[in-house]
Image: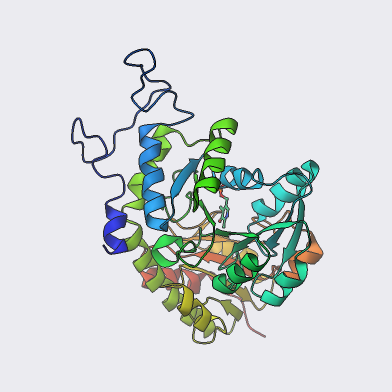
Length: 381
Ligand SMILES: *Cc1c(COP(=O)(O)O)cnc(C)c1O
């Protein structure tokens, strides 16, 4: 079955008693036992809830993993990942990772004795050099946020296996529609479902999919023990969002390529970061491991003074954090999503005062380009 079909089938007729097409929202904390020593399979909603289970099965199917787990946010999912590793363990994480990922490891998990190195995961040699006797896992984002660097998943998986490390991929930007890290050998995939999977900027949620019985039972144990679960209402919103993932992303990608090509031609733009551009040195690698380039792009304007002007003058494209929804959003990573990363590191990475990150929506691409055009009124000297 094609993935486009599997996506639409997410959570379809899960309630066999009524045949409801849409999975019902089981807004219940607990479940009645038929008799002593018997259970319907559901005891208490922290442990298992039918609406949450429907979305967990859907994501496990789409990512081609053994089991899925739904969390209250992407950060809760990442927190559950950190809990797989004990004090003294060392993790290698993509250096230009999501700002919240950097913050939770630096400000919280370091206190509990986790050691972390931030490495350019687009450079396999750099990752190899960062491995120590304590390293337990490589946690990567590809494409990265906001600079769209591509990591070679298969090469990193091979390196990880050589050293008995786990490979964890944050697949938020591409989703299983475009990239399936578990099929490329990774052990765990995580998502901020708040982005493309839910797709409508209306819910915060996170997901994990894993392979292997031992890893899955550890994750189920962590999810139930810490209780960072996704509630039934939000599980339903996520399920409903997933159904249109393929058509949304098709349109978003189409728009993104046109906008990226247009931006490349503008005098006020220094640089465009999008792996789908012919000029991108990473296009070939991306073609090998994914079936698309996603709908996130970043661009550097020629003068930092243009940034406040553009953000103020845009009418259609909303100046807001987050990404992946049907509405176009633009952010200024330097002071927003990546503000927790120390200044010198931000500048070294290229997250500077001229960089804007654009999450392209499903609007008419003509309107989006017109909006960008009218926002830039400076005189080029
Ligand atoms: C948003 C995001 C997260 C965090 O997810 P929340 O749902 O906001 O908690 C993690 N990774 C990436 C790549 C993200 O974009």
